[in-house]
Length: 427
Image (cartoon, rainbow, N blue to C red; front, side, top):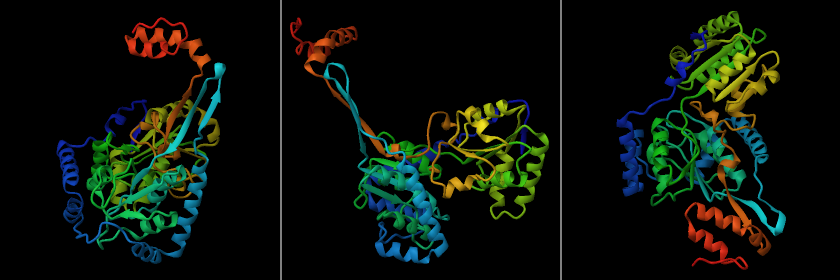
């Protein structure tokens, strides 16, 4: 891992993955082909990219039942408990409609309405991510979205991973399509003969999925443009070096481009963590990926004190942040930019990935400076409510008309003045 001892954070400029023009053109072509050819294009791309001849795009109820039966009972129990935890957390986020009456009988407020339809993308192919099903779909269900659709690429056997279907079945998702990649995003955005379009697309994916989401944004809403996973750990000499090394590797194993960062006030502790990482890589199943991540993007930032450590974190604005210090709550108020914050020595990052309840779809690439984790508010919209009484308009009409004329909008001014008693109407 590279040591940062001079406060130089130029490495942050390199963490954003820039897509090559070839990839962007490829995604644009896929989207246009799906728009033109619908299901035929989806099947052709699935054969081209996944080496699978799809007989049916939609997953059947029988497929779901058979998949759930193949999942080990302890895993099904974990999925069930995780779903309960995630739902309980997100139910506390439900925004409320409200109105209030102020002077002159003016009524103001907001109406909160769930989106009509949402598509959740779940990565697949060679992997199985039931946690992504729960994190992507449960907030939409809690928000009251009537139609929640799931898409995920099939595995080599031609079916979506058993765990993904089991998780979807557990939370009541029944509209599922076994397509992935940019073609799945196009289908969700524009529709095909089988898949009706949705209002918003959520969920992580590879570079081509991210580029497709970027391409369709505006025709449909998206949650975010997610980049490689990140973890930053602030730890002092009271932390356990082996535990911290394991936490850093838990994100390094995601992707060769993942960024694991340790921020510490102790050089000795940093060296201990570095040694532990090398030791633990020796028998990590995904050691080739994790090792590439550690070598290319792994950093150890040496801070003079806790204030400097917090400022380092605020510059990084990490997706995941662990505060593994003697008093993490003393450090917490200094943190301004982080997606999810884990406090104390037992709050390992995977606790949040799978089980605790808060969402694991979190801003990356420094976007925690202005963005939030996926939540219920991601799947609702607000309408403003405005009612002016006659008395309110008479009291405020002249000011409104003056404002409108100052902006050169005479029609706006007249629309108010025609309702005002004794006003001079200019047309």
